[in-house]
Image (tube, rainbow, N blue to C red; front, side, top):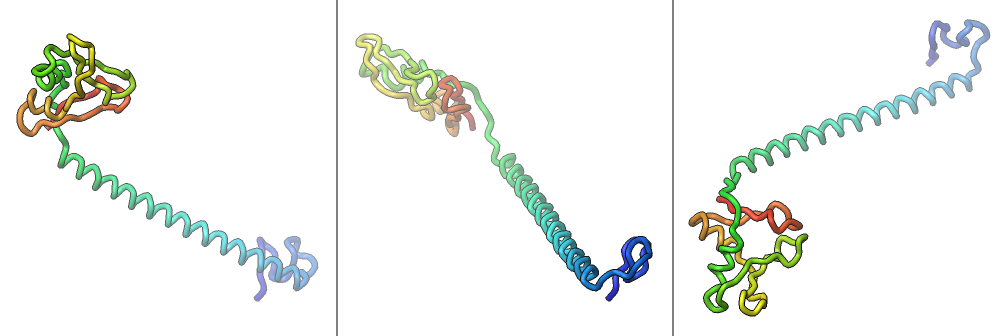
Length: 153
């Protein structure tokens, strides 16, 4: 098989002059074969990437549909002082809701006004039911923000 490049006749150099050596043509054929293989590899990679993007987009669409079908309704905030009073005041007298760590949402505690001793933590789910009725439960905006608790249904 003889190849012609550009306007050159088969078996001649681009200037139309002397015949090309057989080894030179074989080298060009090898180069073309390598280039063809590389082009095919790039096309396969492009098709694979496109398929992955379509699969991911479809998965996200399904995820979005699942989330919207089960979306909760935010009812409002949680009254932590009310929770302390309801959950801890009988055996310990008056109590105050305190945050022990400003960077930890789970650090809400109830402190006895008489002794200053921490008497216990707050059951936020229980307080949501008390504030908003049956079926309410707690949610948290950020574990590092004690003031990000809310109730939802």
